[in-house]
Length: 137
Image (cartoon, rainbow, N blue to C red; front, side, top):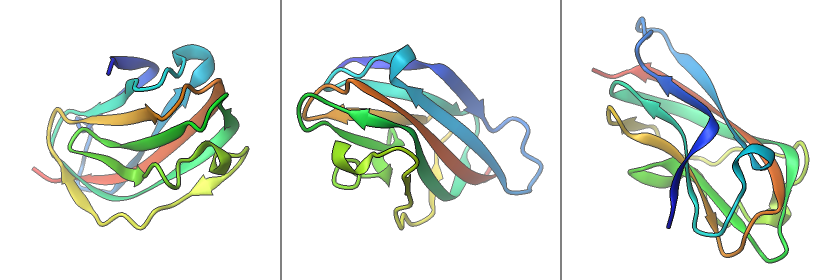
């Protein structure tokens, strides 16, 4: 599996003031490609954070010559925000919004937000992951 850094990469955590914040993370096939088994780093927590909720918005439908799947989460919980079942390419249609009932969890400092491509290559798609969090350290 190849680990790659997405072109639109964000680091979160330094500006926390105790209020809930959110970050928009983006994966864009036109900039990042989408080979099977690629592990894309979309961003990184610079401090320990408590994830309170997250959802995925499909801006551009994901396509595949096969039956690609997408999982989105963190290094320690790779499908926290989107598992491979909900992330099947047939579900990733334009303007779909996917919210999985993920329990809140602590994300360690230096942990990554990741997107994993499974089963087959992606041939198109653009996803945004909206993550709400508070500083936990």
